[in-house]
Amino acid sequence: MAGRSKTSFAKRQREKKKAERASEKRERRGQREPSEQSHPVASADDLAALGIEVPGADDAEQDEP
Image 1 (tube, rainbow, N blue to C red):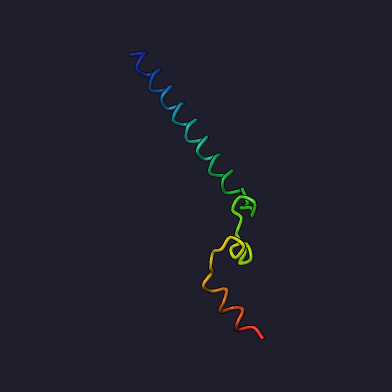
Image 2: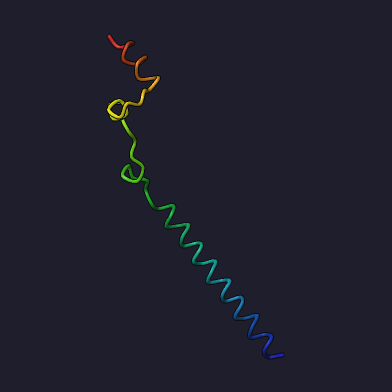
């Protein structure tokens, strides 16, 4: 019977460690601030240079005096 208690203790320890690691990972992920470097956004000029038409860009330019 002693073998059984050792394995269940070891299993609980492994599960506890795994939960702690997951918790730390969630905390680190929450602390990270999204940077514009990770997800750059193309401007209308960039898209025009590539030959991609932006439907809203023409309307915005005509509305301005």
